[in-house]
Image (cartoon, rainbow, N blue to C red; front, top):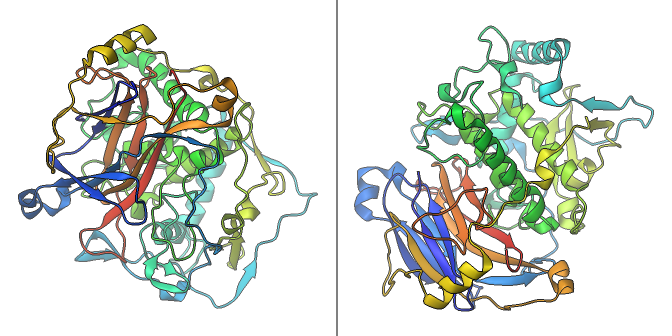
Length: 512
């Protein structure tokens, strides 16, 4: 469930709304972020008493009201040339999950012998990954057998299912530090960087008991799910299906016209982790993680937390589909959809064990051409490509509301401010009208910068632009701008409070 914060513009942008999903009340404080002298920040903090009563409910949320700005490349003026180097895997640390007193050893086997990745032969067969809803029994059986074989391998075998799950845990929960920066963890999330019925047989190797019992087939996935939401009503399945299509259109089409919006902010050696995720990571990636995990577990295990997500066989299908989304995104007409050409990104390196039990150094640029990798995806209809949301209010209605100042702004004479109801504020819009060429070359982007939150909690807030704060619309309305979502996780390099800091960017066309 969620509360609202709304934003309105002094150049009539009307109202925007944030709908944070928090179990406790929170307060907002205004501060300045270092090195960003012209961007005011709103810090949203939980009360001291809340933290003392239950440390797991504490949040900080910094919402940068930088306004809307034209962004051609969204380049980082503070960047310096330094790609991420592979970690020293012999220096792997424990991860403070399920708790500080009961940490997990996510460290895969080590080796001093590392070879560079090599592409398969161009004469190798081209393998096509089928759509999950179209696979036959033979294909599912083959996948189940592969998982069973991996689960049967001993724990010291790097190819075992346990160690493959550990790879995700180690790279995502701070078990490794950045090469050359021992005080900085290595984090692969928060930057650029399925038909579930196949997984419900308790006798199958694909089964995982730690899943949400209320979200099993035939329950339809909700891509706008927030903690505490009721189970979808089967009688409203068509409505939910349409909403999911609207969400995908926003994340893949209208909100991701350029690489930096789709992939997120750059992450270089020496950077703090979690600089800011792109549209593909927030939704659908993150939503599906939390939707699948078991809410009765302390940390949402398995899929609902980074450290344990790889223990569920559905994790690998989910990420294969994220890979497919990446492939589809580059083929969508319009915009400037192509892989990032930043050499720091292209030359960033990671270590993985292969099928021959050899440790392999893989660069990002090695993963970009699926044809060279000798695999592709089955062509199927993409219903969300044309499901653009419709306005709830007409232009005339929005103009009248702005002229009458019908949106009551929240009086914020001092911070903190509690986020347990609708909060409305104004942001400045740099340019009221633009030519067709300007609209094509530049997107208007609302930047919520420096979002700070407790990482081991599900955090979700929705942003609505030019909407009615007392009755905010959903993903089917163009006033709904998008969502920020966090998969619970922790970091070994941080204090016990484990705060995350990142950015969130929302794209909107003029007049939308």
